[in-house]
Image 1: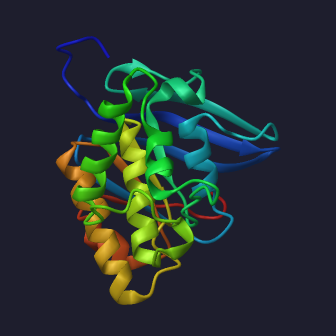
Image 2: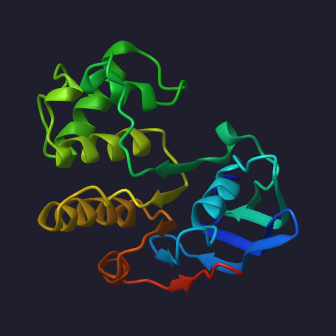
Length: 219
């Protein structure tokens, strides 16, 4: 994004996705900075396929038409690494061979140089997540909620300009789900990120306080 350019959010422009002759997704929608759009629908309706298209990881058997614009920048054909779109999945996908601090450091942009600077950024992220001093902890010793918070902070340390959530709360019990969901939403809003949440849970969509889009199995 050009310096000084106003953030316009994530624009999904006349997007259509097919698998063979079957149309899975048809969408035209804009997500403003700090807004959370929820996408709901039955299994097989194309929710995860939509997220794959937005991050540039659509499988070869799918065909896509339309544009993806992020803060005025057309990223439709951009490589995954340059899109600046972060994603959280159902599984936290923490690296078991790295410490908590090592997992977070993995998310830091390469342009951030200097060991002390990088360590300070990791420590700051852990403090934001209520996990100060956890740098040397083994991820296997963390609770589900702690793992979810570490996974989010690792994603945010990469400095994404938009965030996709692929049912990241589905494996948590109801009390923990509300707690982690609130943390994720608060962090995203504080950073002014446009967010797309895929969920089966109406409570998630209500908590998101944004538009709710329904996908059907035949689009």
